[in-house]
Image (cartoon, helix red, strand yellow):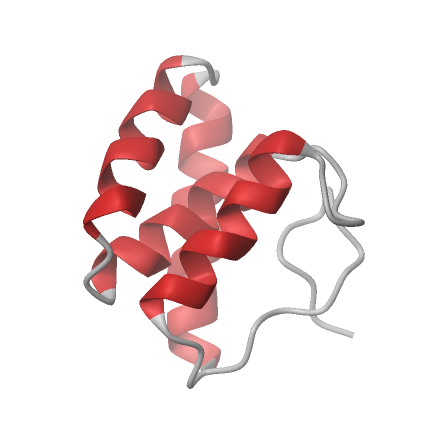
Length: 88
């Protein structure tokens, strides 16, 4: 099963997931709500993907979240986003 990151065991969003939906998913992971675990790496990855799909809010949240993260975690999130794009 593919997962968002090694931190999370929930399935990845589909390749046709909209920027708005990716943003909403990122919010869940950034707050640990809606059944999603609190996982900044996954949240950053989702905000990054949402930003690529046109979500302006995601760009703001991604930047704010990155200030709370270690640089290695940001790199992990960026790598996960690239892998998702490659397989999606």
